[in-house]
Length: 180
Image 1 (cartoon, rainbow, N blue to C red):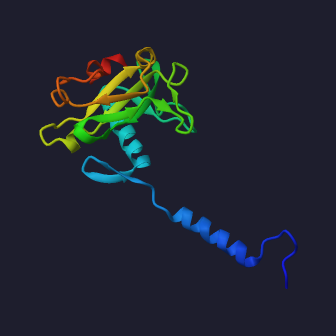
Image 2 (image 1 turned 180 degrees about the vertical axis):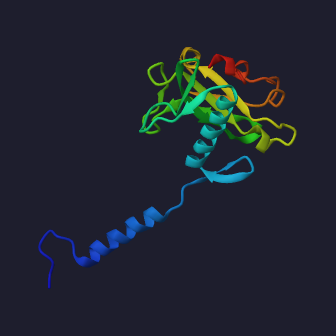
């Protein structure tokens, strides 16, 4: 029996379904992060948990917003809440780390005061350098991030920069938990 004019046959429908099924089975792109290869979503989760742990160690109560907000965590201390955006950094060639200071991948926009109060950059130094036992946390007030007009940050452990740059531009924000 012929299919009705303009309607796909059963074989055509089956082929489309098989193509969609193959697309769903594709693995997420894995990234080398520290000593393991994990996908980008997990990297973000690890970074958020690492930052949350440090905030708790500094006396904050940490909670997570529901939904798609421009911030990842809420840090509360002494009756004041702060919206925190966590950015994870991946090691690149030459041992430096780079992370975006933007959101919305399809149409990137820099963070503003309306989005969050702080951006905390997390770099897993201890997993990438044998002589470093502590990871990097860079606590950047959103006002400073907006003022810098930077769309990305390149960070590296002190003394590990290339050429004459032994300390990165963002070093003054390293471990600045008192800012939060």
